Length: 188
Ligand code: SF4
Image 1 (spheres, rainbow, N blue to C red):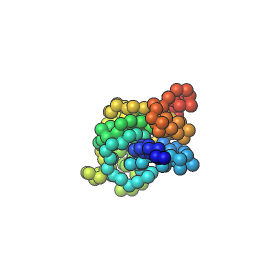
Image 2: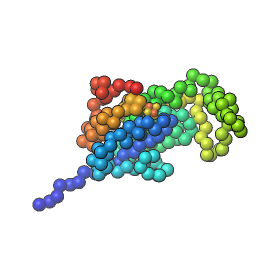
Image 3: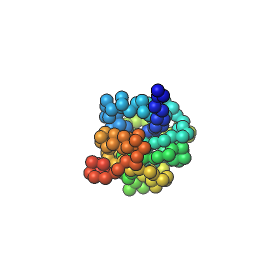
Image 4: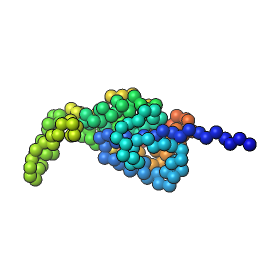
């Protein structure tokens, strides 16, 4: 008797832009379900799973945490969009800029850097400056969808683990996740 064909693994990425990593911590809160998930995916890029620095080609799904706040974030989000079939705005910072966006009402990056590195410095007050190493801050922190098309919004600060699981289970079945009801779309 022939063996049933194996389903291809979902090529999954998680991306960390301007966020606190709390959304990634919530992903880890999937706890033992991660053991069920592991054989069904190939984690091709993630700060919690590998040290790969280059975003790969041909990614099925990317969970993108954080707003777009600096030149590195900006370059990466365009690369992610080009190389990913389904881009998920993962958490409130990705969707609205949320916490990193608190700097937006200030008068641009200079005011933020002055406050952080000059006014509050205990010693050696100076702006961090290392061209090519320290990315430049953008004028404003932007939500992901203001820069590239987003396929799915997964809100929460952080999104609860059950909500992340519901989305991933639907995607693994080849279905579009149903983002309805407070348990799936509540912010905060
Ligand atoms: S949405 Fe909340 S948990 Fe996620 S990165 Fe932003 S502040 Fe952190």
